[in-house]
Length: 157
Image (tube, rainbow, N blue to C red):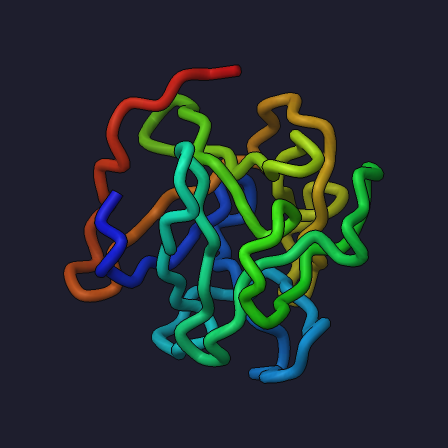
């Protein structure tokens, strides 16, 4: 993983990008999926937390993905929050087929997914038990080259 690079995260099920909704800069700002564009609210950097975990930082806001309120429940919202390096802000990459990965939360052990496998713009991003669904799989596309990255070999849990 190139921690100096910026990536778009493209959902396998919908083909849409992980997106900070409405260009929010606030703590608690919604994370959704949206048609792929070129805006900074769809660009993310992986910040090393050690132990194979990363914080996923928005280029637009400087905030990181966060499981809201430290929840361990299925369906809990993924939001953006100031980087406190909390376990609810740390994710590991679990390998899926075809160059896709699943983002697994350190605190909950759950996967980041598009809620209800929606293909609509604005669909919420939540955590859910890791079952390997296409709505839980993400392709990392480097912003500067537009080609898929090779995140390396990751072991399924």
